[in-house]
Amino acid sequence: MKNKILSQKKSFLNKFFIKLIRKFGYEVIDQANLNIPSKNSEANENLSESGKRSINIPLGKTEITRKVKSLTIIIRSYTFGDNNDGKVMLDQNKKRIFNLPKIEYTLRTIRSVIKSSELAKDYFKDVDIKIIITDDKSTEKNLERINQLLRSCNLKTEVINLKENEFDNEIKTIDINGKNISKNMISNMRNLYKSIKITEAQEADLFYFLEDDYIHKREAITEMLFTYEKISSQLKQELFLCPADYPYLYSSIDNSKIFFGNMRHWRSVNESLLTFLTSKKMINKYLNELKLMSTIRHHPMELKLHEIYKKEYCISPIPSLAMHTTNINSTYGLPPNFNWKKIWDENE
Image (cartoon, rainbow, N blue to C red; front, side, top):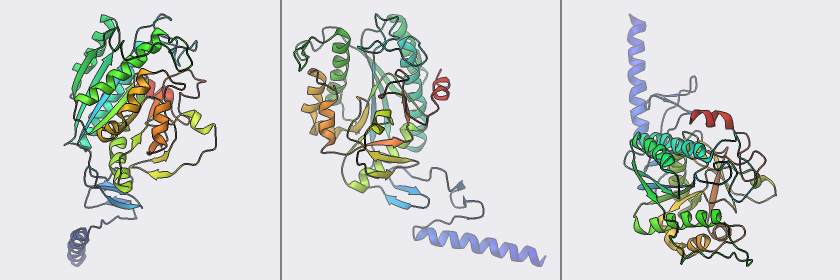
């Protein structure tokens, strides 16, 4: 009986102590089992609160001053092709990993983004997330498969079909070296230009420009949004996020700044491909450069984007949050230390 009374007193004192220190902005962690009693969670779980604070053990708390309000994801769909249903990569003779028609990569990309976005909504309940597909010349059969995927999700979605002669007056058919540009590359530029034009007409807070061959981990969008809030709050400025840890980033010795996002490390990079997330403020600031990137064929195509990175932060995750499904030997493709087959199979 005496032991029971002592146990009750101890329990009461523990609860009182927890409530008291929480009023001062602290949390109690039971080091015996890494449990956080007040949150009914473990110390290695996602402890951050969207729009309020980023919490990492043992780094502590970062108050969020740059809250994410909305996200529009623009996936540039390109499923046609003369090379065995698009098995061969754009303007290349290399086949993609798994050697399947292009539509299979597009569908897995969309499916992975839907799953990742739906998980993000569990954490960012007040953030409006919308998915837009800008499609260039997919067959009716492929479009129906895309639409079927979108109808099955709980997010706002839209499919925009590009016209073959759309932006003919804006996009130059000769590159900066005076050479003709292929029809496939013109299509790629047209789709990117359409994406940028969409941002001019919409008032979303963040825009995620995405090629249709990036298969995402389920936690990708959640990590990107939490990281944007945290790092932007720390730096007191807008930034760019790239979801992929490209192999070519390790081919040279470059200086990087290391950040800790929400659940993984991020590093500053000087280059990326044409899949990136940024804010409407950044798009407005560099609108001319982004349009030039999609109307004039530079070498590399991302040259204008890389020039922006000399002035602004672009950060990339370690390990990767997405798999760029290119040829297995491509330095711009499969991320290192990443279970490629697992992510591929999970999004079948």
